[in-house]
Length: 253
Image (tube, rainbow, N blue to C red; front, side, top):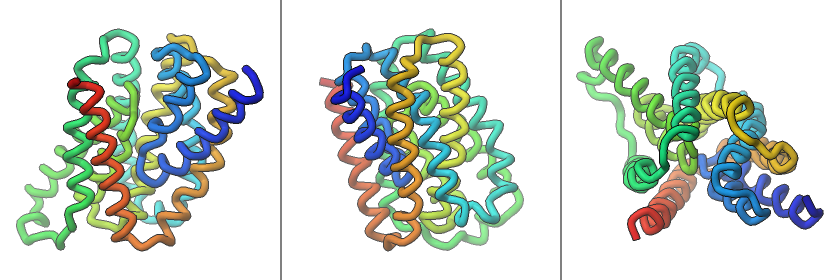
């Protein structure tokens, strides 16, 4: 790997870590960089997943203030994230990508609109025992599906997960973002372990890219913590819609 390629990967890692820890858009910056340095698509995908382990470490470390009080909920959802990441990794190694490529733009567009729409206070029906149980089941299924996609490819998986957590938790954007960083970080790490055993990871590229991700992802939660929530949600939603349009163009043209 040349010095210019290393500089490219570090820069892409910083950008990916920053956007990933804020809006879950890390792979939009990191995956193309791996293609630019000459990795074939599948190798770039698994190498990208390995590098994004550093993104999870940095974003979780930066999110510690917002994670206070979320421990019980996240512990219930962690097995779901673990299973989703593992299933996604296995799917990548055993199935073609066309189905996911056509579905993701639609999911991402819906999630982006959900982030843009205001969240009102819970209704009386929403706090009933039966409604809460149903919400837990639907949330777990949604998180599992998103983590499957995260383990499979992951571009904008964080936007999908952020939309779910904002709707379910009704907490602040920073708190939902912190939960997203934990669940997606765990799913990505599980997928990376599967790829380390069963696929060809370019560890030199993963390490260089990962160091950039670590630096960028450590800053992202700080930005979310101090930035006004309204404009930040607007920026994330618009970025998600733009990415949905781009992915839709690539998938359906």
